[in-house]
Amino acid sequence: MKKMALGMLIYMECFCEFGGIFIRTTASKKEVRRPGRPKSLFAPISTRVIRTLLIEPQRRWKLSELATVAHVSLGHIHKVKQELLTQEFIEEDQEKRFLLKDPTGLLNAWQETYNYGRIKSSLFFLLKKFRLLRRRSSSIAMRKNWDML
Image (cartoon, rainbow, N blue to C red; front, top):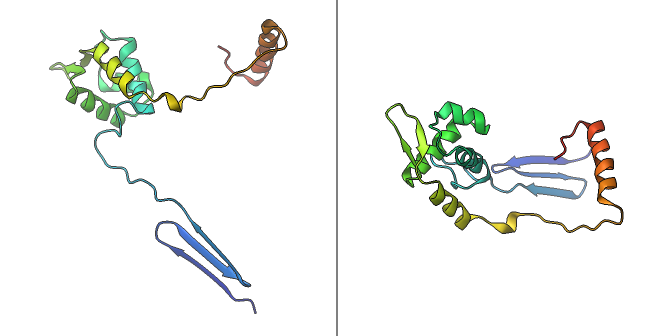
């Protein structure tokens, strides 16, 4: 008769023992999310909101309109809006619509916190003509229903 032990502890720690073999696996602790403000005003999802605001700096936005255009949840839009109000980048009217008050200041703040190390870049060279490469990649993209820039 084979002896087998199987167990699981809190924090996703798992172990298994059978036939003289012992296996243990541990998952890293997941960061507990706190309600309230976003981790950073310039985190990737938050920047969707900021880009949308900067594209139309004179527009007065409702939360729901901005959520639809930026493709971000209403809750996240609200958190970003609160942070923008705190840092005085936007102003709000009596109808709860808000507008960018300082687009240049917002861009400067984004620039100061931007991390260029996150950008992945590659260098390529071509042995064939660029037009030929473009034509071939376009035909592949059309077959796969990809968008080409």
